Length: 210
Image (cartoon, rainbow, N blue to C red; front, side, top):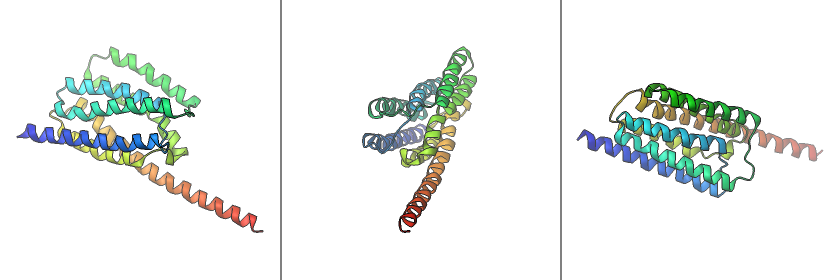
């Protein structure tokens, strides 16, 4: 009975992954969303490794959402290569790319799955800074529904886990916290940008009416 419940949660979380990324991919194709190439390329690599680690530690059905996320991160990465003329790459992105890639050999040398997972979580966070920086400047370049749904999906993924330990829990907990926080940041920044634009329009109108 428990296995059936866990499988149900795993399938539900996987469906939520497909739904959230479906919206995201549609927005990319419509050029409403502009994913940062560095973030999504590195996330694919990191999340796929995390999936393998989860499987090795008995995550079973709870690892399915992680696998789907890895595949969809690769899809977003490919679309960002094709659709985005302006890759929005800054010097700071190069620095974090170097830090991220340099941490991967350390992961390969780490024999303990818990240490490997901790390093990958750190690398995952470093890879996300490019998207955070880009979205702070242009909050309308991201799809809020992706992050909001993913936050809820992460909770479902936790319920789907067959084994609870640092290796299986670390990634879904990170996704829940970071996706929820990023959703809030996008909402706040959109309001700030809209307010500023309205003030600029009002000031221009006032100056032109003199």
